[in-house]
Image (cartoon, rainbow, N blue to C red; front, side, top):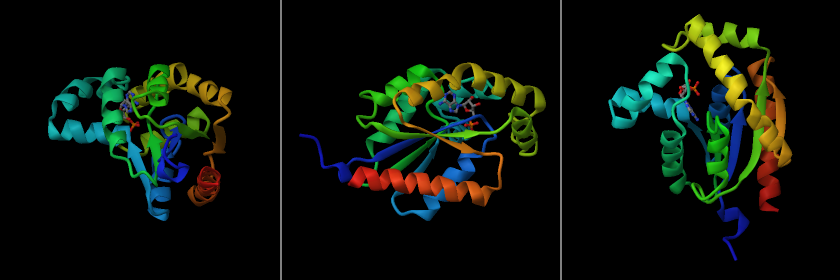
Length: 198
Ligand code: AMP
């Protein structure tokens, strides 16, 4: 017999294109509830780059081009983080998985824990481009932004079907005001936690 359900961390995957506001929404949700953690793989990678670590040096050239960092680096990084999860908590995974092999690794022994929900933030590409260009990050010039969106559509979007087939997918229209989205997002998360405990 495994541990009691309340002792297993709930993993929630956030899906959606760059610029959909996943990071903003996840940070606000984690601040609103005790025991909820926001893990952004983009933020983790930027920290590694800033620190000049080996992972950072390997990842930097992919990130600058708007390409995906290789799966082996990402899976290793996320599984390390998942080993010391708060067992009663909820983990909001922002920016991972982005490929099918990453999603399969997350479902398997890399974490030892199942994904309970995937929340899919949607918005039209033109809205995303406008938002991303206004953000002013190093990888946010127009050509790189368009490339990141193309990579998203080709490689990451198929994960929508992956989670839908497992009946884990919920959609959120991300082309609305931040507080409206946050209310809907929290409702979805609160209900998955309540289901998990019952
Ligand atoms: P983000 O902040 O989520 O937009 O991520 C910034 C960049 O980090 C991406 O454009 C990728 O180069 C890289 N990255 C973040 N998460 C992943 C991932 N799960 N797989 C591959 N590359 C990633």
